[in-house]
Length: 418
Ligand SMILES: [Zn+2]
Image (tube, rainbow, N blue to C red; front, side, top):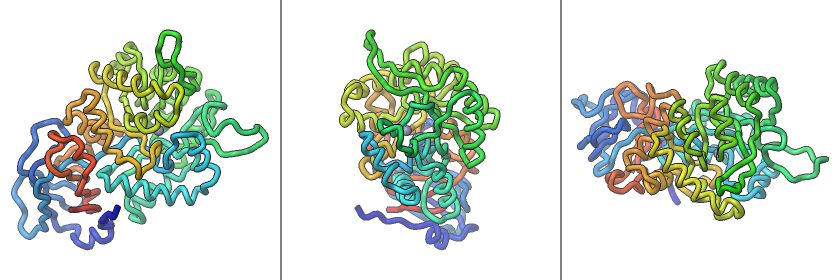
């Protein structure tokens, strides 16, 4: 598909920094959950929103988007820009064993561009899957205007224990790269946190469980990775260094250990028991559901995965009913970046019980809150970064419009327009 992209350099040459840009559209959803504003006018100056719906300054450049809806730049809080799909372990090992890190970085730059063109102006990228600290470099290239891409919050290598992560199944004589940093013991955990943060990690990502199975009571279960002491040490060290922790946790053994350890978000949460949902509400822990990846990978994985979508839908619905804070996350990279538009997640969220407005808020206000960035992004308000997207028609009437983003502005620069 041919895409029209206006690069950063071109965009800034069109509009001098001191010259305001007026963006007009039929309507606006500000991300705060209030009524749709119609018609809509946003004044952008430099990289900030100057005003919304007020008088238009004289001499300003105007972009009229017609029958579109303006929204805050979208946030995907669970991605892997350095991964290009891993339905099977063979797909995964291929990338780790046959692709150099420079090649993977080039592919990641394409992932970042695709995400931005889909309207995702911010990503929390939750580990490089064996590509070491390459995410820190991709982030630097984006921030320096070398390549187009979203604002990145990166978690570098992630952590699991010996035997807890792939690649696996090879002869013990072979030395090969792991998809995570292998961390054992309380001191090992603290040291890994310090190391990753010193190399540029914004978040710490842990894998709290693995090897999923259905137990004799018909519940999804798993094997936990870290001991409670290890988990607590990792979280304590991260928090001591003012960083948050995301935990991959699919079933009780992982989720319970992660919550007792004090993590800030539960990733996937495929089968969260009711008592742990209550604990998430009480502790204010976010759920990052990643419904899209489940739909994509389950059919190709077989075994217990045949039942995982059903567990996942049930868990999501119970979490929603009980008021767990939910932030939009897709696990893009777990499915190929060009195979599915990650905005498909909005469709799944509404299919499993959210209103369209609730779904939009997961990728705007909620995800910004998870990132600790509520004062800068996630809603359209004067003073915030000019991260603005537009979709055709009204997404409250047709949520699939979120997959047809036609206008993207990040940090005041235009990357896509009709
Ligand atoms: Zn993931």
